[in-house]
Length: 240
Image 1: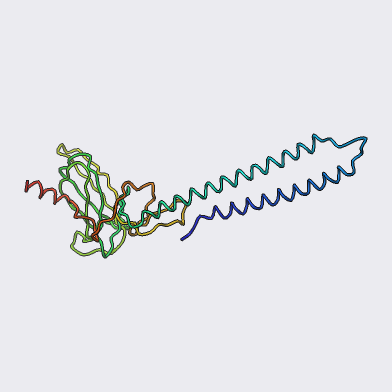
Image 2: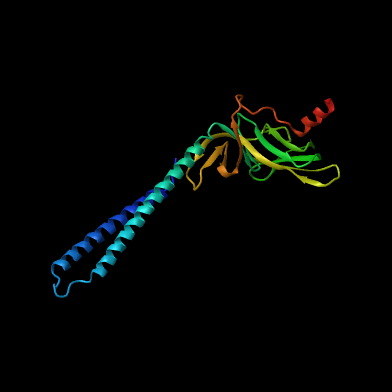
């Protein structure tokens, strides 16, 4: 697990600055003491000059103390952010985006939100190379829903594990085009601290904390509850 190197470099620079100030201050006091011992009693040194220098040294020392406090505060914030990110492990998250990870053990689940009823919806799934591997048509009701894909292509053959993207488009009853927002769902298995911000590992995806829209306890079953697909909604309406 990589850790941001800012803390190490800033601490080293802070210590070097503190050592330099201490050395300069000792030299200044040594020179000042020598001057005071050898000054002409009839023409003493100007006290305003070395007093001003003392004030400057004090100001620099205070600035170093302030920087040290800010550094400690920053490290505390970083540790808090890391602890918060680690708490996501084992949780089911929903994050903005179109990508999802297909594994040999679990199907891919995406969440979507239709702004209105869609009479003719088309779900398209592409592989990492951008090739369409699966498509499905049906109708969608307005509101949130989930789409489950078991990794079987349109030709009926199973597809390899990897990252896939989904796109849902369609038209309403008036024939007007409707875009459906989608988001990825999955279980957080790890947290990557190698970058500037913690990234949650969901399958083969990396998800930033700022992109997480929903967090909940992971289902007790290996996969989330059965999703509602366009065809399933049509069957429910026929049974009703």
